[in-house]
Amino acid sequence: MGLLDKFVAWVKHEDDDAGSSTPDSGKPGIKRGEPWMAFTKGQVVGKGAYGEAIKCVEKSTKHIYCIKQVDKGSGDGALSKEELDATENEIAILSKLSAQAAPFVVHMHSAYESPKSYFLAMEWLGGGELLDRVQARKHYSEDNAATLMRTMLGAVEFCHEHHIAHRDIKLDNYVFLNEKYIEEGGVLKLIDMGFALNYSANPKITGLAGTYRYMAPEVVNSPTYDEKVDIWSVGAILYCLLCGKFPGFQVPGRKQPINPSDEVRLKQMKDGCELADVDSHGKKTYLAEIHPKTGKPLISAEAKDLIQKLLAWDPTKRLSATEALAHPWMQHGAASADPIDGLYEGKTLLQRLKKMHVSRKLKQQALVLLGTTIDDKSKAELRAKFNELDKDGDGLISAVELQESMLSSGHKALEMEALEKLLSDIDVHHVGGIDFEEFVAANLKDQVLEQEAKLYGVFEQFDVDHTGFLTVSAIKKGLKIKDEKEVQAIIDELDEDHDGKVSYMEFLTLMARHDDSGELRKRLVTRASTSGHLSKKDLETAKADRLGGQAT
Image (cartoon, rainbow, N blue to C red):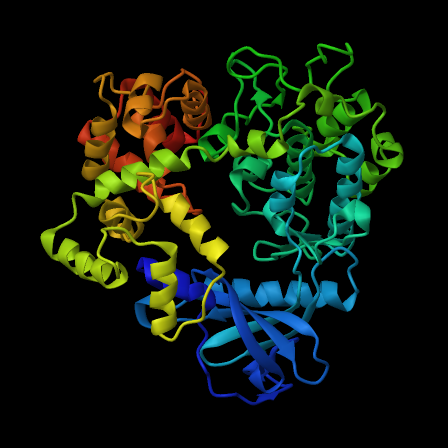
């Protein structure tokens, strides 16, 4: 998909013929046809691999809804039976919860099925993701965190009472109803039942599901698991709210703490784990640290106790949602005034959380270098598209030029602020717009990323010191970053084995991060193993991955 297409996908909507719908589709809770007799289409507000989210107005009530359209596809791009069943499972679960008027779970108004698509009419949640709110706040006190947790655990408790395991609890999947913060009377709701499962018939759940940083270890280490995986995920969120980073864990037989960011690391937690008191550099974590001015713990004893009980390795010792809501910290709030706020004067939680995403710069620059390897025909086609957008011929695509191109093509305009934000993410050369190399990088197809040999060539270009690793010095030179702390933050995020540098396999993990299934990374690592590009240590890790991820 081209750069312009990516923008158009957010705002474009077709004038589809209004389809009629009847209550009977032969499937419980699903109407036949399309919803456009009952709803008026508005702006496309989101785009996914299999469809889009559309802001709509119900004609009879004038209420605003969000219709999630899931396209069935056709030919080689058609959804599999398993994917179709998963969509119908999501509809069934939302129907069940919505019928019970779930207080903290997104409500589904209705669902439709046509020969080409499914349509889920959901209540409109216009306040944005909790993740964005967390990043925007200057401080997150224990009192505010406790208020949030009451709502988050309330949603999980309701799901579990109705034998629904969500299986993908994370900051991104809690969304506000409006602009109000929760302590101001704002409403927070749990969304996305794509991985959810009704376990009323069989409490033994199977299958890999969720997001690794929030995933309980038993999901990858046990043949079956139960709804307590959701509790672990809530514990990871609470740790993140109070500490500004994801938790690290100490495991038997391993000196360095583990940050469970992928399946391999989770498998290393097979025989047990506990929250680490020190990070990979030997520095005390926030749970163990004492405020240098007051002498008080940064995190109150009650908050720490709750976190440990939510992140208990043994699911039978992990609190239930109801038990967590009854915990003293949840009942009475923080035992002390906001100690972290005093330590981080002048800093924001946003600055700390940003460290989790600083590696984007490295990946974007790698894509730019990878773009130089495409064939001449593809490059010529992209050059023609680039020239069409570069109206003033200055060699850069500005936000204004992109906006003008969208309007002249009959597409709806995006807010200039949104355009400028995305352009700044792509502008790794810091020239005030998108140059041709950056344009090529943004348009690289996944087939290019499958070419492991080319990725190794890019890795070698970064490895200016010829050490076989990306060191502080190499990244500093490659990205032209003067701030050594920023470079160290990139290494800290990617350095999974905590040796102070980025190996080629860790680099492949970064380049494949957009593939949630993890299959791209596996293919690249397999090819790198056979091509001789992996170090001895990486080969041992890759072998451990194939054999079940046992720690070496």
